[in-house]
Image 1 (tube, one colour):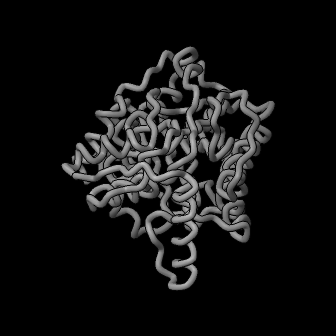
Image 2: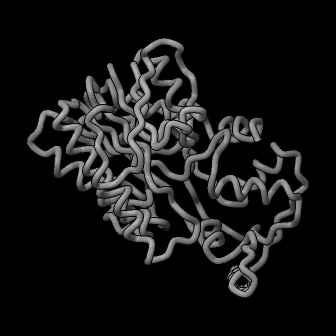
Image 3: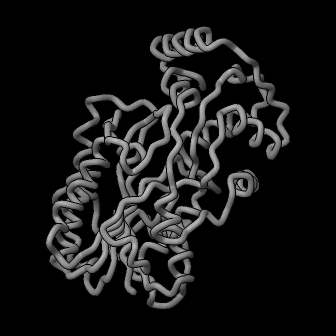
Length: 329
């Protein structure tokens, strides 16, 4: 089928395009700027990969030319999650992630698209939880990014209601892999420095999603009837604590990083000190409060619906995923 993929030059997009091509799909790849074409993964030399330039994504984006002849849309593009999001950023997230998605859904319906896959985030549900997160967990997003992704989900469901277009929503946990940006990249850089880390006393539990697992799950929903009008949580199916994750990264990096069991109250005090330093100098330290919250909190999810409805099990385990990530770093 002809599949339009937004965000094709991003982290997930670069891993998804070869999987889609190998599955026999033709691709339409809308870009913000023509210069972005240089960052595209070249999965084919034939006309099966079609390029379209449309500019920024918001409520005024004109998708009509890009949507010509398209059977399915995979919407990856979004204003990215930030480490330290502020309330005054809400409008920017809503403009791109919520209203921009609604615009694409509307024009997809007008173009006769049969299927719409939205790459959402576990952040649309919560940023942390000491209990297993399931599809029945009430959505209570805690960040501007999370709230904008939940608004995008709701817009897709509402606009598609009563139409011939089916939808699928994917909510991955933290995505990692070769070339990963964001939180995992920062943690890897910290471990590689080989300094003692005061994180040994953390007893949390977190789910992670290897980017190739996510790419294969995304491709499967295009051809599986069980994915129609359904939401799925996505992860590798193996949860780790922060100390366990650091030990595995350190072993793969050949780092002598030592984990010090610093009491949590003292750890939070150190984070507040780092915050004060950043406020005074403008220079961010590795373990400020936003980073620490993610390192100490739990967030683990139930992927059983993926297995039950789609017969899908993550093909790559955490250890192999981390090995491939570190081999590319």
